Image 1 (cartoon, rainbow over the protein chains, first blue to last red):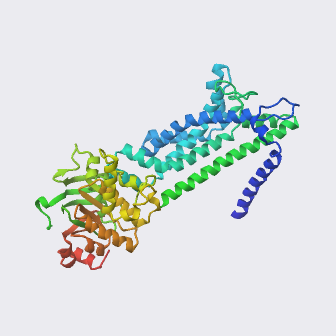
Image 2: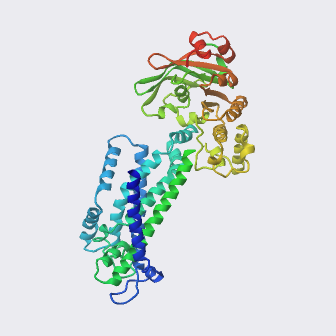
Length: 266
Length: 261
């Protein structure tokens, strides 16, 4: 029974993957990955600006989420008792349940509407909000899973609490923390909804985060709902690139995790 | 209580009790530890011997809701006095744990020198590490891989690395919490031999649930037993040879002759 369900789930995944590969592989080539979109009717063109935009938007989101998320996770792991940490955990859990479109709407309300201007930064802000709960809880878990004996070993040598944490406990938890970070990046790489009214999209090589910017999953959305077969083909190509990116991130996370396990189990 | 007196003592407890929340795990222990001797703490599981040991370097208080009453005197100074820095105490009283706990992200060299080695230049650091690894009888096995991970070492080697890490800081007292509990008989024999040689330089207090081990390696043995409320009590402390042949307490005799525990 369980095996059958597992086979069903795996089968569905393989069918989706296979379908995207079959539909998308024809569209993906060097031009597709490096060129600007062409207008309808002009053959060729690509999603190069969308890939660049994804990297910029996710990069800024990650740069903001890492310090906030990790420091909060460390705080919860070390001083995890009492009303303030409990409230933080609760808020983090609530935030992880908020639909991404609502988070996009919030980003729109605070960073787009007041300036009357779409921007990549507002998209990064929305992505950061999506990454935070994942980072907070998983980094807390990662630090908590460092065996108490390792921590006590450091303290028993006369190390201060701070030094034991920074020099021994956090490095020991680092592979698991990086795993969490990669999974959080993979999570937002596949997000489209918050981008609709934040990054908005662009036809140009836009690199200024205060301007509207193209983003790969947003381009996939725009192309997929268009009536033109050539754009629809490119949507499949973009979807394939997204899936490969998420796959690589997940695989990287897996490898880091197995390394972390090897380190701790002995 | 006998066997210890005057300046021969380096460490002593005075009416020491240890609690986890409301539960009294160790009750009213007063005893002294002879300088440069191996003292074994024996007793059945749950008799509070590990908790007692963890009071000596102020590690016990790190557990949730844990606290200590009474005094622990290191060279006549109460380590629980208000103005005492626990970190300074832990540099003078080292500890080896039940399971080997090398720091996974540090090399063998950096593990050995993890106590800090403040004020040493790089050559002195290497000399200190080499001396510590020699003292832990590990040097010959790791001298060619000082930069590699400690996780590649066997369990016994890891435990000797933890001993090297503790002795590198040159503590006055070395606490050992069942240091061979997770090791095979051969690795155990190596560590036991090591304890005798380390006692030339350090005062050793070792917890063991293995009576043969206590008889083999210790000069003094203390026997503990939990009372009917679950509080660990010190029953008897004496020279090992005497405690194992002519114990003065009936309960000690019952335990060492295998009538319980």
